[in-house]
Length: 421
Image: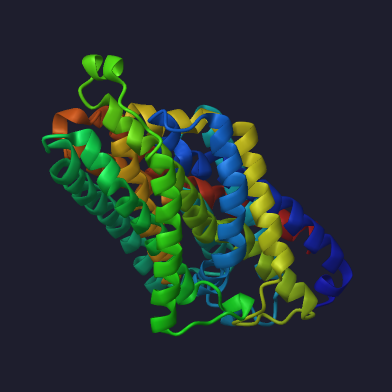
């Protein structure tokens, strides 16, 4: 307790610096993955991706980011063994932020699309095992989270696959695909607005003291969906057939219809990502602030200050703007050839899966889900449409991330313990 009283301000300053570093890494790596489908399909430019992310990542973190943060902060570690030594949790959370931040910086520099969720959870488990004991890890929760890493990309891939089949049946395989695209386009845009707003309203706004009944949530989501569909309809109706482009590629004009639709899915994916992955950077930070402010009490629950959510959103945006372009290419161009219609399916499926996961409190990996979505639309054209070597390399980078985060965190934990202990 004396250490916390003596160094409390220092701990908070370090937590803010390391938290910003970690969220910068999230922006550079995970947000780049989230926006990669939109950029890779040619629907939006890198600069447009940065602007969209700046607005909607921040909105997702601020409006719906609080729910997952609790899982990262207190679901993984049993605080009982360190009730008398709360400074150990502070060292551990600081070590986790620094370890995950460094690993993400290395990966982003190399252009590897790794999981920030893997990075921080691996780091938290690593410091806990090394500094507190194996029994202090909530292995039941870890098993649940690990299962979500398998289930979520499969779910994202399945939704993307089904969406792609529906677009084929309703649009691409009709007598006049261009007219069919303009007719059905607003309906798909409605789905974007409805799904994202519905799941957010269900569970995502408790920390803003806004709670609606199930019926009211459906009504509000339907209204939002209709409004978004109306904007989509206004954009889609301006598009005309490009006969020259159609001679080179039969569906060129149809893909032009999907280009403005991709703006909506890009916004939805950025919102979904902000709501889920901001927790990776601010969960440990929130834990440090909570312990210092309470004078050393390791509380099971604590309020999440809004300034921490704001800071997390800012860090993510800076990361994408400065380093995101390196990772964006991998998911957008190397797994399978993406057109706006394929990217629309992959991104909508990924956004829906991420938001569903964030509302249930499971810190799933956006990277896994985004890759699952891209594989899903690739499989709709057959296995030959996917570059299995690229997927193999991505999976290897995922496997390396957990132990890398854990080893680095254990090292930094003992370093901090030696400095302040």
